[in-house]
Image (cartoon, rainbow, N blue to C red):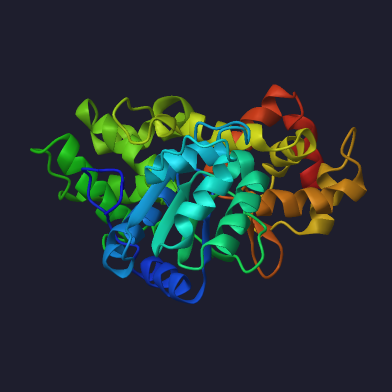
Length: 342
């Protein structure tokens, strides 16, 4: 029972993440998968939901929120997701809460980041009214609801032939070009380099594989210097993931103006970024020094940065996007020089 999306491509790896999410669902009624665009949150949520079907007597239900820009249709969209038709004058959330109250089911809310606040409020209300309800969400950042358990979804490991990124690349390559062999030393080295350059981001790897229809792995490797322009494909699910530029651009537009400015300026860093270093290099103009540390935290909350023990790190793919905007702002020379002097 349920309405899970049908996806024809295989699910590769993620054994550790699946165990973590399934454990979290056993111990918590609200679990949120966080991570940057294209890292595989939706696919991991779908795989988890598929494996959990037998655990919920009233099914596993899916609501895609990616098309919503405000909260007006949020409750209605979730009602549609679970197949609830209510013609009473009640608020949709009241009807939904009553319908859920006597059921034991898993509700998956995919792509909450555009309306993260309203999503958190809706989920809190539904959990309070439906004791048999468990909710799994995907979002760039946590919903901020009480008792929420967050599971960060990292990129696939990339580098060696046995790594998940290479396995994914080979499986998608076989689907794109069934007669293509990537086992010779030159192709194998090119595939490993592609996976490394693309940070093991599943979306990026699938977009790269799409180029195998007309290019060799070696040719793709040579073109990745302009990866934001090259990696497009018209067949990927879901529609919002048809270009890496679009995927990262979506995250970019959801950031506040000062957060976007800091994202661009941080692109001059490599490795760990500490708050004092970021303040010394990136402050200036509308971004004063006191605003840098809070903006760093916001970028980390939105999965643009990843927290480490010493500070923050940015994936190369996200750094390249920031560098593109830094050049658009005509600040690339200034920030590079400031970084070098610091």
